[in-house]
Image (tube, rainbow, N blue to C red; front, top):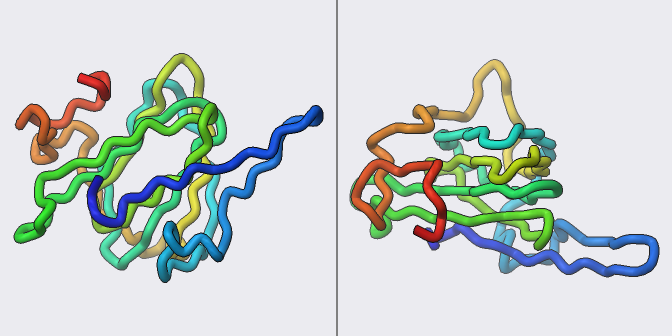
Length: 163
C-alpha cells in the first residue's frame, strides 16, 4: 500500500430494522491524522465506467466509501525521487463490506465500477471544490505512463485485480 493510502473497516450494527453504520468520526485519528473534512459528494457511476486518472496539487485528500455496488480504487505514485515511485495501490471496495478508503490527492488516482450494477460512492474531501480554479491535473484513463508494477506494462483497468 502506498504511504497515506489507508482502508478503515466500517462496523455495521444490524437488527430487525436493517443496519446503522458510522462512516466518519473526528476521533478516527489512525485514518484522519490531521485531515479535516471540508466537503461531501455523492457519485453515481454506470457499470464498467472508468474515472481516471487525476490528482490534486494543493494537498486535497479524498475519502471514498462505496454505498452500493463494487468499485476498483487505484492510486499511483510517479513522483521523481519518491521511495514509492512507480508503485500502485489497488483496492476493491464494495457495499457488501463497508470500508472508508483514504487516498492522498498527490497520487494519480481513479476508479472503475465493477460488475453488472451501477455504483453509488460517497466521497469526502479536505478542500472545497472551486469550479473556477479546480485543483486537478488530468491524464487519460489509459495513459501509458502509469505502469503496473506487477507486469511492468501500462496499467490495464480492465484486467482482473487478482492476476
